[in-house]
Image (cartoon, rainbow, N blue to C red):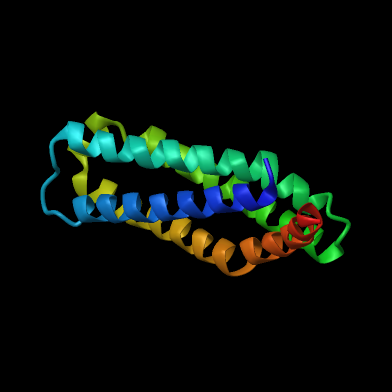
Length: 149
């Protein structure tokens, strides 16, 4: 698939993650837990979208940036790759730790950690939108011009 299409998909996933993050934040600011099925549903959608998004970046975006021949793009890709593993590992640990039983036993702890995780992911998305994606789209721009001829 062309980089332009992949970038469109990655941006759409950012929008979906922002929406799901908002839903989760609405849930965790409540003084009492919601029904377990409601929380599990939103968490599951967030997890699935995030995992799909990270895999797409790992398998498509970063390899293209690293192979671009542009030292600035390679450096930027390496910087983001170095950070993404940390975010993915932190999210997996969080998601594994907070089972239905653990959430019921420590609602406030779950809420605090959920806010921290969502903040970290939100900041990452902002950085990607501001720095990484524009650079990747510049890489794709010459490809679009060539394809039109």
